[in-house]
Length: 257
Image (cartoon, rainbow, N blue to C red; front, side, top):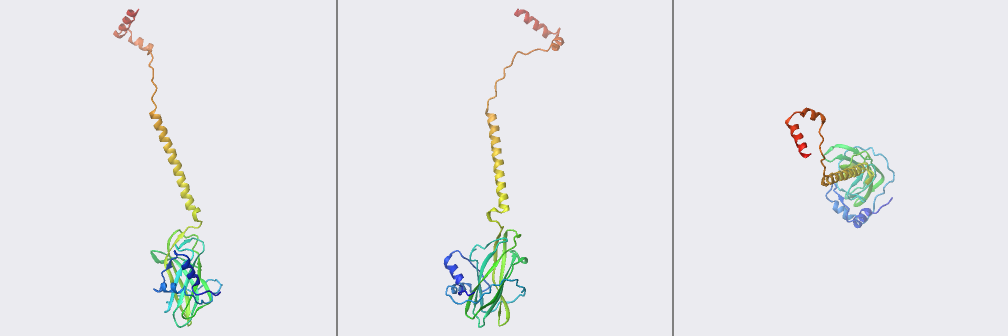
């Protein structure tokens, strides 16, 4: 299908002030973004999507500049297992046409690019060419594994193309993305944390109630205990028979009579 030169990028730049332009391999990405508003003709992009088997490591061609935009995701937050889209802009300042073959990307650990996390699927284009002094925009849809743990990763995206039957490739994005767990707010982790918070609140309420109950018991006055007339054990009387204590008791009883 035919698309105007950087028409999509121009519309996005004009309609959303929060769009972020990713750092490209070339230092002229600002000029490419400004040229997107000028209009022009794009190459023909094929609709066929298939696995791209090119694993070659080629150098970038002189006169080819790239720019990358996350049109619907300026924060670059990628949900695991769900599709994300980015747009790749190319500017051909050479003397020959650029034949765009495919766009591919890979996910790496941020602290060590040698540790590959995942090779993402490639988007293959048919009959996609950029004439000299022209610009074009190509979509790329990718999805990281649904088993990938949430966190920060590095995304490296490259576009593979030919000029005069010689293969080249340019890195259009080499930066971080934030991977979140699929399911949004109702993920298993969020549900667990929510349940744990509710349980802690319940336990705290029970503890406070118990403390108040104990405090109220202590503040109550203890009832007075009346002490009645003590009774003497008969065995004790027999043991005290004939002692001075018993004689004093008997004399006191006689005086009362």
